[in-house]
Amino acid sequence: MEIIHESLKLQSLQIGIEDLPDEVLEFILGFLPPYKDLQNCMSVCRRWCDCAQNVLRKTSIKLVKAVGDFNILWKNIVSTDVVPTITKRFSHAACVLENNMYVFGGCTTNATSFNDLWRFDLSMRQWIRPLATGTYPVPKAYTTMVNYKAWLIVFGGWTYPSLSQYYQNVTMFNDVHFYCVNTHKWMLISAANAPPPMAGHSACIRGDEMVVFGGLVMSAVQNFQIQCSNDVWVFDITTFTWRKQPTTKPRPPPRYAQSMIRLDSDRLMLLGGVQTLQNRFVYSDCWILTMKGPTWTWKELAVRNKEWASANIWCNPACKVGDKVVSLSRSRNGWNTAKPMVTSAVRLSNFNRPEGAPVSVRVEQSLQRPIDRDQNINGRRGVLPRQLSHRENQLNPPGQPVAGPSNNQNRNIDPGAQNNLSPILSPKPLLSSDFDHNKKESTLRRNKNKGMKIVRQLQEANKYRMAAFACDAAQNDPPPENDLINQRQIAHLERLEARNGEDDQHGNPPQRQPAVKKIKRNTLTMHVLDISTVVNGNSMNYVSWLCPRLGEINGAPEELVMYSLVKGNGELIMFGGVHNDISVPNYIEQQHVYSNSIHFIMPPRDII
Image 1 (cartoon, rainbow, N blue to C red):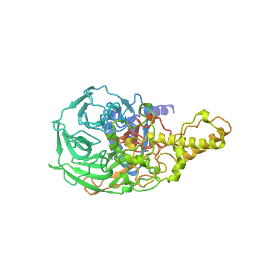
Image 2: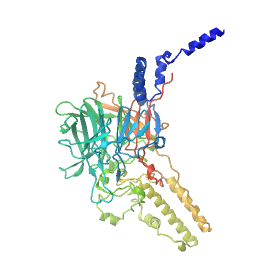
Image 3: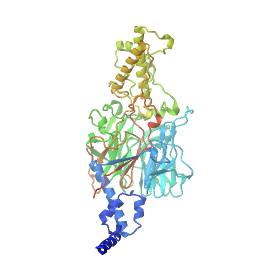
Image 4: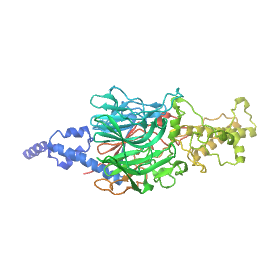
């Protein structure tokens, strides 16, 4: 018996990982990040190389299937989990090159932009700040960055002047910078026949060329006034020359902040965008640019199931995953009504969005304003501009901007009600010596304090609705009830003020009002556009939005806009952004408005 046990023990010691079936070995290798670690496994032996390649191939296939089935997993990495970490920002540029995601530029406010370049190691899951040399780009946002071989190409963008330079306006650029990922060196390229300075454009690599479309441009032909563009420019990387590419008509209307997706070597897809300088339009249309011959051809596609489309594709970038296009937008749980989204082009001033829906951006006003509209920058405290009277309104031009989306919320109040509210909305400061314990004066004082408290709450809510996130209210439509402050919060404030008034009447010292707890914002959900009808040899004239998954997905982040969304190996990577919906009135910590967290969208893991 002892001899038999010894033989069995010897046989068990001789069994190793090479004796495992291929399916089990691939399952084990699937736990490695599908980047450098998995690539190192290919160098072990021929069998490991084949298994690692199968893991990479199956990971991409599973991501496409998971996106089509809305069966995804969220994995979040907050800034406190990695050291060092990148500064919070939005409207930056990002791209994936080999095993790394690179992030350049961006901003936190209209007066704060960056020109730093960060590298996120997708295998180690950590941030690295390369020590670069050469000619750095200027700090800017709304720029594009694409990868070409071992180079990163940064083009365009804008930046705001210093707050002290009131005579200057926003500055746009048409510089082309190359960054070598091997030598960590920046180079400024002197290109011939350069396009006008632009920002908010789209760029893609086609062979040895960079194709640029649309954006906001500042041209000498238009007396250096900012205009929307629908021109196509091509940059030859080998000769460092630009050319304006002729295209057929009809062509997409002028726009900026659109998503441009490469379908194949000869076709690009244009999706979404916005135009707010003259006629305020948000687009959710879809175009295909065929890049053949001396004149390239535009073709508009019909978009089906628009009621399932992603909201505001212009500030929610889209990313291609196989024969699908993914866009992240507000979860439909945050919508109180099921109105359809923007169809092809809807005038923003007349667009009745669902209650609680994300607001649109008033970029043209921020472009005309050289100083920052964020009242909380550098710790400054802002005030809510008071509602103009009828006489003052006549003295102001019709296009004068008014801060906040609820600038017309009192237009339907009758004169009698305005007289009753005047002592509340226009309170005078009260001194301790003026306090009278008379019941009538105590009641009046409680009403004033209550009005002051509500006004301060409205101010706090309105401060974070920057010019880039403000929206003109319709001329005849009342504002949404929960656009600035929740009605339950107002009722709660009234009850607290009534209790404080009773304590004052009995001589008790007033109690400090507890801080309003942070209310969870709406979460992001995934919207999927099926483009299988125009890829893989198909040439139909339509694309379709798929019915999104109802309910929140576990781990989904809170709603953000102006983030970056890129595709890695078998995963989607979302970084940065700014919160579009500040629903808590006293939510005054500016550092919580912007994000530097990384969110991964991955397929569920197989079980064997």
